[in-house]
Length: 223
Image 1: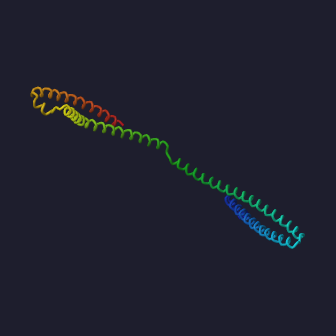
Image 2: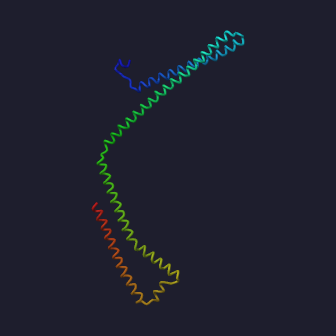
Image 3: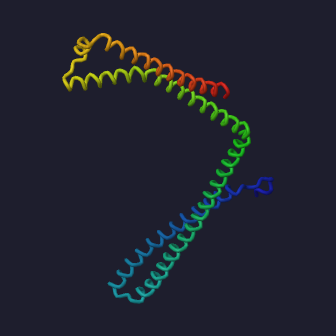
């Protein structure tokens, strides 16, 4: 009748309709089977009653009827099992169709997203990110080295003085007392030489540090 009005059912609607019909048939078969089982119990009761009364002819007739009833119950069990298998197959088809529709929608969405993505622009962004990241690492390294170089002298001098005082304390020598007892010229000359050497070393170290920092800063400007 659906073709008369120009409307055609979709596969999903056909599956749903057939599934409904199968479920209805299974319920009817189950109802018939339960009725036969009730009839079986009544026949057994009648057979026992007739057997007590000694009516063996009636017992044989009802016994044949009981056998036919039991065979019919067994057929209903088999038919119900077959219909349930068909119903399960239809349910599997419905699930497969739903999965296909879902995959179709996902594929369409993925295609739209891929078309919106500009691969050359994305590559350019990643290259720029890599360049800026490298520049940031270089700036961080230069600043860290400069701070370490600025603090290194004071820390080493303090550690050196600490170590010297510790050693002199262990051997029982007082530095201040030795300096008081020592001649002024003997103390002044080495001290002056030490200051000159220290100044020269500091100058050389500073020039090396400045040149290295300048080279790194020039590299950063060229990026």
